[in-house]
Amino acid sequence: MQSPDTSKLTMTKSWDEFETIVTDVIKKIWKDDLAVRNGREYQAQYGVDIYGKPFNFNGEYAGVQCKRGNLRKRIIDSEIDKAEQFRPILKELIFAVCSARDSNIQEYVRILDINRIKENKFGIRMLFWDDLCSIISEDIDLMTKHFPQFIDRTPIIDKLKEKIMNSTWEDWSFNDEEGIYTYRRDANLRIVREPFEKSHDFIDDWITILPDKTGRTSWHKVYYGNSFIENIPIVSLGGKVLIPYPDLKNLTITKYQYILGKILNGSYHFMREDFGPGVITFDKYLEILKIKVMDK
Image (cartoon, rainbow, N blue to C red; front, side, top):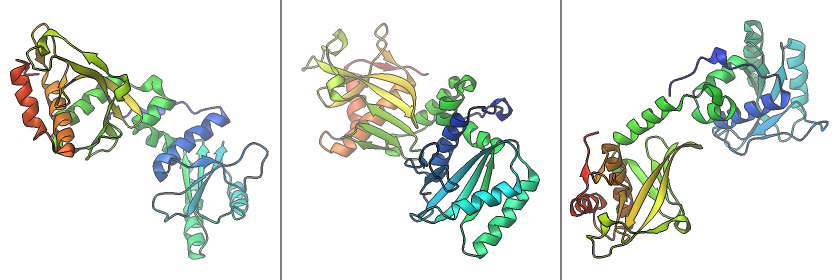
């Protein structure tokens, strides 16, 4: 995605908001959705505001200490002493600071980190506001949640559609129980089938040519991460084929709808192995229904 100018991401003045932002960033870095804030106000936190298990730490814990304003060396030392009392023992402590970068503090932390690791103590890392903003600006979910005013969804949607257009059904895996199609090259990109109980019986002139003149219609939703991108109306015919809802004026579907249809049918039938190759079935039904594919 195109990154916004991080200088426009205003430094928050709310302490609770800052901790929330840091928690969300840390979850992404650690790949740990269960990373949480430590305790509540006025409880002993032992120098740790957020803790969790980074994906590459083999089940060991890491912690984060959030600070506002300019950070002093004595404060760093004091918070490290407190964090030594945290249980279980940490493998790493990160200082997340709501202020601009400070090269002197960065150098102090780097040297401290190396010396502590040599002594078999937990390491020390640092994230200033600029660093947090750089991470946030590269993640659509974080930007949408914390800085939605800077999100221009048009280029994002276009980029995701381009990914879909350049894929084949073999690039997708399908979980029938969950109704989720996942793009193998980027698991954040998913197509989620609406639950069956939300689908509806469907009949229209363009499907009456079939022996079974009814179908069911449902939404298939495109997501990137937790961000909703768009709804795709789909008609299921006899449990054999999924047809993107056509333009009834000319009985056409777009090239994008056609690719989506091949993805949905190919993945679905490959998983079921009971109706033959889904892509062939899809093309055959388009021919029977006299649905044409537009060039764009």
